[in-house]
Image (cartoon, rainbow, N blue to C red; front, top):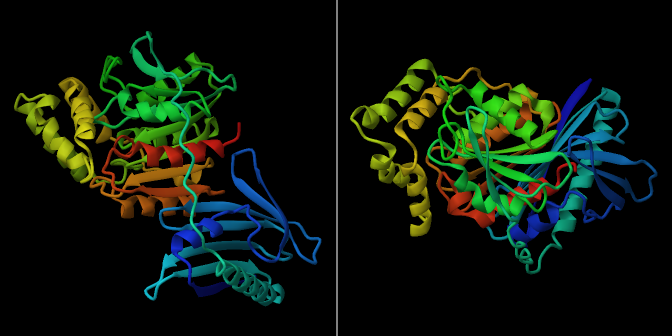
Length: 428
């Protein structure tokens, strides 16, 4: 078995946004050699294209494995059609050119028997060259997305077994699915108002107050991530949800990923914003220093309302409006000191380092352009690790322009576009 890499790049006069608008269309017939093409979703929601080439009867099938509109990157893997190919993984990137216009880079890593490898590589190079030539015709004004529909109605409710859990909920759609939103360590379920109203058009959606926040109560002992996972299961059982999509922000992203480690087969999708690994990859000294530094004001007799203004300065991006800052301040100020201590203790005592090979569901990762706690470079790297580790990766990574850490609150329209696009692609 041999292995080789094909690398083709070319200059395109059109603006990167115009080129990307064509190239990102995984099911589009923009390549000149395609005769027929269709897209389909497998049982796990992975996007697959099936196509034929002019002059051939062979049906080729490829799965999209990575997409980033922010970075203009598309990756896919070959499933069937190329005789003798043991593996075939390709990546297309559109970048600005220093000379103006765009640079399109198209690569493939191929494993095949030595007798076939050179032929497959030669054919791949010809395919890529013809595709880049076709992209030289890209151009024109890009259309604006249609305005979002009016938000779905949302009602507040509680699950009154101990500990009590407070939720906001959209109407039941009758398909046994639930999209559950999990807030950050300085938030509450109200941070997800804009997302509930948007997601509810595609799937029943609920935002949960974590233990001790909002209308939820603390348990009889210090919370662990297993307790949060048990709460998610209780919510699913209460509302008859057989399948879940979890959407987390920061602390909530860590909880969502922890649930995915334990119950991957329950999840149709996983959306991680402003974080993922939490402190699961930090050493004991770093975790303890983090906890102690944040308990200093509590030990001095302060409550979260006292230091909320300083926290908001760290959380908010430079473009955050006064209204957004006021929302973040109100969320932080509403947290009881006992709840904040409880969450800090849980966050700094992770039970495991995540095994990303367990993530069999589609994953969307988002973070704010100006996020100081989960900067784009860090989250992009985690997205790459998931792509590299998952057995059938389906990863999307996006940066929310202008936003800070609580990107869903600061830029709800941009956040919701990516979220609803992701939800629409999941199996019904």
